[in-house]
Image (cartoon, rainbow, N blue to C red; front, side, top):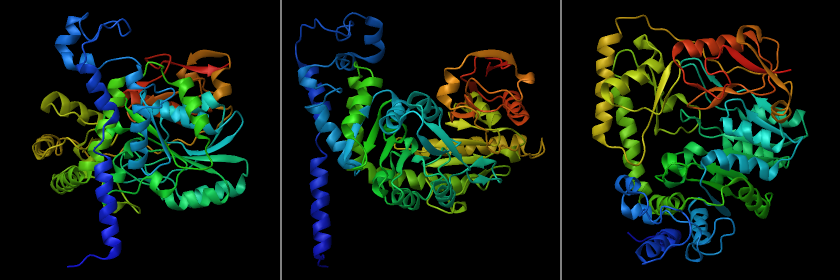
Length: 495
C-alpha cells in the first residue's frame, strides 16, 4: 500500500527524531572522563573512590569514577554551554518544550523555582488544596498568596480527584488580581484534569498556567496515556523523571514552553536555589532516561499498560477489594497508577501496606485510610504483578470475613486562610496543646507522607475538624511529617 505524502513526512520526522535522540552528550562525556588516567587534585575528596573503600565496595569503582565536580569537559549546570546544554536541548525536544532545565534536588526544588520565577510577594495564585508540600513551601519563598480551589471528591474511595475547569473560570472572573493557576496533574491516583480547557480559559485572561507534573513524566511517550502539559500549551511544568521516567532518584526537570516566561529569570532562580555542586550521576541519568524514553518508551509503556489492565482485571475478582477504575473517570486517566480500594477487607490502607511489606516483601508506593497505591512503570514484570495479585488473594481469604467493611471519610479539609504562608512562617510562634488549639492560626505544616499533602498549613485556621482528622490519622497508623512535636500532643501556632 502506498503511503500518503503526510505519512511519508511523518515517517521522515520520526526517523530524524530517533537518530537525533541516539545522542548522549553528557553520558558520553562522563564516560570519556572515567576512562582517562587523571591525577585528581579537585573535589570530591574520595578521589574517584580510591580514598573510601567501603563506598567503592558497595557502589563499584566505575560509579565512583563518575561522581565528579564541574570540569571544562563536563560543562557547568549554572551556565551550561557544552554537553549539559546539548543534553537539556534534547530533553526539551523530547517534551515538546522551548527549554528544559536539569534539576538535581527533585521536583520539590523545581516547583520552588517555578513559583519563584513568575510570582512575587503579594501576587495571587489559584491552586487546589491537594498540592504537594513543595508548592506550599514555594509560596513561602516567593510570598504569593494562595486562593484555594475545591477539588472533585470521589466518595466511593474517599479521595480527592481533580479540579473542575468551571471552578477555575468562576474564580478568575471574580478576582482579576490572580496571576497564575497552579495545577497538580496527574494526581497520585492517576486522575487528570481538563488541562486544555483550563489553559484556554487562563490564557484568555493573560494568566499563567503552572503544572506539577511530577507523576506524569511518561505521558509524552505513549498514545494511550493522557496528553502532557507541554503538549497542551502550559507555561511551565515540572516532571519527576526519577518517578516514572527511569532516571535516578532526585533527578527531575523543569520545562518552559511560553513567551510569557523569562527563561533567563528561570536560570537565575535555579542558580539561587540549586546546589552549585549538582550531581553528575543524577544529570547523566536524565540524559540516559531521555534517550530510553524516546527510543524505547512506546514499546515499554505498551507493556506497562497491558500489565496494568491485567492487574485490574484479576484484582477486581478478589472479594473485599476493588481497583480505582479508569472508566470511572470523566477524563483521560493514567492507568499506570494502580489504586486499590481495601475497605472491604475491614482494614485501613496503612494496615494493608504494612502487611504486604512484612509478610510478602511487596513494597507499595503509598497508603491512605481506605486505599493503597501501586505504581507500574518501565521496570515491572508479569512475575511481580502475579505476586501482588496472589498476596491480595491471601489477604482476602484471611480478612474479608473477619471484619466488617468500612469506609473512613477523608474529604479534603477546606481551610480558612488567615495569613499568607510567608507571613505565618516569619511570625512569632508558640507550642500549645493540640486539644486546645481550635480557633488559633497554625504556624506549621502537618502532612501525611506520602503523598505529602498538608492537612494544615502555616497561616490557616485550626478547627475542630482539623484536630479530629489529625487524631484519626495518628490512630490509623499514618506517617505524619513536618510537625514540631513528633507525637503531635502539641501544635505550633501564631502568638
